Length: 194
Length: 238
Image 1 (cartoon, each protein chain N blue to C red):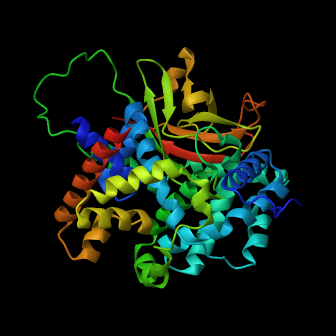
Image 2: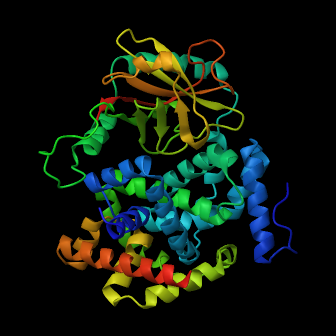
């Protein structure tokens, strides 16, 4: 079974390996699926754990995530989305679904996973589009601090307006207005740069 | 809704901060408005750069075996029995969860315009919508309710997103009316659309249950569902 050869460490090679594993998984290749799991489990588990808050919940969600990946892999279009973005989006959306269905357990577990959020960009960073990233970060820097922080918190925590307002101790309307104004400015900034 | 408001709603939806009626409104736009769907996609691409900042954490080593063991494998006989049980359950009525989402989709006023002005073109019949609830027993093919819209003017049935079927299989749509017998509408095509043949369009009416099953390419060879039923929901007039 082809687990990562030591020579391929460049981002392009990592990306190609992921694409290959997803496409083969789409053909119901179990060995490729296992390879895909080994290449991506830590990344996707980091996302699930951050959003779900406890290892137990995050492992249940992670199992769902890989079963979804197994079924959807046949529809993956390599030209449309980067492989890690495609996988991470499935993980984040599934973890958010879990949060919405288990609000009490989710709130209790947040502290346990808080330190997962702001880890430094890791090896997977190389799989993402660096140019896109610079643009977003540049535009984010132009936002007021509360706008920037709440948009980031929303993304990393997978939380609703109501939860965000609760955590910051501000009225719901204030929270909505921060994020909406932030999104509007981000939109203008990202469009100007395009 | 102004273009700015629409763009912000797309961003809020992509970020995941919406719930309740606001989320339902965004879901409804996602089905009805390809421009909105593109805008959501663009926001997702922007936010995706943050995925690099989620730290890596190793899950329990035993999880790999658990996941590999949970992959669907060769239990074809079991699938058939499960399909029959599901059809019985479906004939008994649509699920409460689907009804709840549907209510959210329908009850949220989209605009504050007064209802007084007469409707233009009363000749065009109002569309039918359904929230298709995933059937967990079918193997969890879907992970969230799926909105469906039937445009009575064009005979086009559109789903909000793709139905995940294994490679080499197709998603087939069915109606189930009072007699509880599923009747095929056809196989879902590209763009998650299906143009219903004119003679079958009369079967789509409020209260009729819409169901999706996984079938061989081209659809069920028997005229009845042969694969697992992955989602069901009742149609309502908007």
